[in-house]
Image 1 (cartoon, rainbow, N blue to C red):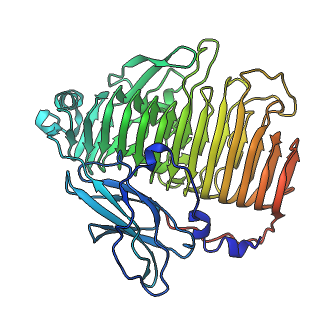
Image 2: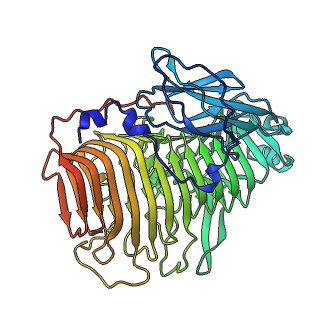
Image 3: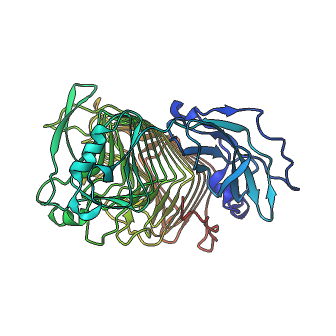
Length: 570
């Protein structure tokens, strides 16, 4: 494999055309073949974008999220122009776009063109028709008595607006700082937090923060969990949160007391369905930021998750789909502390013997994980686990960038997470660079499968197989670039009694302090893989039968990394 021809320009790596199977929720979109305008392309034309869609769930009265794929032969594409009703609506280097200022309850026609300088463009893509939502009544919280001065408690006024809002209506949070302690959302509601508005949750010991037990239906019986959160939606359907404002959890008042009792999550969705959250910034949560528990059909688009304060924090996950199904996370930025996205499905123990349901169909695309987004940022990237006892299947991570984040993908479990089955995970077209996050007991590498997560036992020593032994299978990495100057590039460790099965790495380039460590794998296949290790061997294999290697090589320390894309504002 010729590295310089395969990975330059970087567009080949990030956006190569792929044949994929989309989860049913996101395969929808009113695409209309043959409706592309008869536009004449520029000389030396580029291929047009393909698979343009507009998920029906990701719409409001004035906005719509568009998704598309880079076409085959599109290595020279630099950006995309989006047209609404024949007029240029915007330009982006990414594979997603939020159209704004739509006319409510009107059908709009969208197409996309590929672009590169100087002035070369493709014909328009196939068109997609988008019907924006109808605009409902608007309740301004100022009209209900909210002050927004950052001092006066505004909880009662905002909660009254939510309670009185009719189905299909919007509760509007205008500019200001609103001191609140706990808010409960409901079905058929839009909460709009406009630019310049902040929901500022009050400090520990000042506000009223209720803790509510929740009953969840599991495959073995009813599961009881505790709902302790600041902003909550329980059993809500058709819920939208939008606007360019902020939700601040006042985490700095909680973190120094983390050993004194539980801390609330910032935003929790429990047993909700058809949820759309876009554009807001969620920052400084006391514990997890956003927890989507038993959620069916949700889109999280254009969100920013931050740890702004430099007070030492802990357990500051960004977005955790937990026993959730059909979730799309697109165009989000993560500068949080701890796992940026943690895909979970519960754990079992002597005091909690029943499993939660499985997590299924999670798509993560066009997201940025960046350790420099805020003063307190220390994002750990994407984790799958460690709570995995209900099972996790069909996860698709694509077209994402990681800068000084701990992991591109970290699959983690152990023998205590009984009943774990993690399967059908694909990571494609992603770039990872790290010079700051050092190795530790967890997060040892940019790409990691760890079945001994915080387990001091040796992975070389098998234990007896049981029906509850963790299983990991069908994990695939394709079109990946990793440059990590301080840690190992890849570590893949299964259980001796339950090896990881059907693992593939295709078109992967890694330059790291240490190379690839593979242990207890069955059926690993590497094709077009180059590993450059500054220390030690590029490849280490322990108990890896049936492995197949095609065009696999050891690189040299002089390998030149491709120029990274400008994706600071996804």
